Length: 394
Image (cartoon, rainbow, N blue to C red; front, side, top):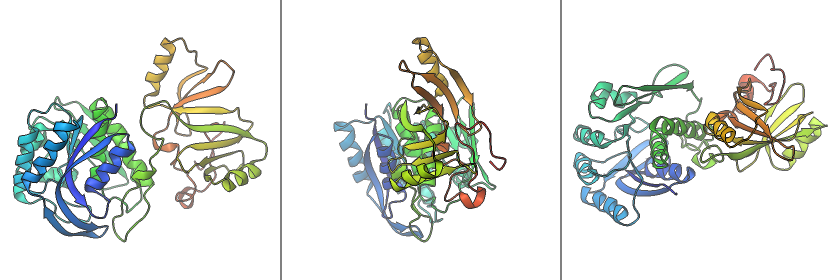
């Protein structure tokens, strides 16, 4: 099934946030994006120059058009435009039995205001309809804090990007009080325009696929982090993310996105695959392992003495292994944490070919020791997925 996602949000003329970021996110995650535009903005990476709200009646008409014909599996609400529109949207969505992700947009990344007091006051009705609300730290304060949001009956995802320090912590609090927490190193980039929009739309798409909320958030966070790594660097301010480059990293599994082959001449292999058009992203100081990235996002490794191996990425490695074991498949190695930041299970097909099922999150294409953007920080001498020793600097 292709999930159908209705996005109720404003238009960003710079393409970094709003409807444009939402549509790119849903599309890259395999969904069908539909829109009800609440406002037209003139903005770029430097800020918002003008805002024109769309009349509430027109917003409702857009919603009704897609609901009555195409149908919807989830809804994402972003910039709402006005208090009148917020109440009108709440009226039309009342009773709809689909997941709703509410991103209470109040400020653009540049700091420009995108919601007035009357609009913020009307957010309560939308939170009462939502499955989850996704405010950042300043927005959470404006909403009265976590207890005030949870009192509306929705789950709360507190985004930590506005916090201090090099570690970002996001907290999911369910209406029953259950919590989940994710922490990750802050990605050093100014291309953060549209992160909140992207996260909320990814969550909505994952919920539409039937994922539980915790899993939907976890997968959405991974999409955001990869899109930050892949940002093209446009503009002189807070640039757009690289939605279009997040390929073969998320979605239904198993995903065939990595192959390892043996090499007898490391230097010649690196020269050959670079000339072929692949981008080398991992190297080792002892010249025994290298990994390359293709334009489509798949990766290829060459390693001295390696056994040819195909790699299938899984969202839940333990669940995949359990399913295969119950089907009678025998594993050579059960899920094991590896020093190269992958979790792997290994098996052999009936013809004797090596197969690896694994989880790596962003570390397949963006390990901490990736060449290029990371080379000045950590150097190029790192061990590989199949290495038996770890470089002392890794």
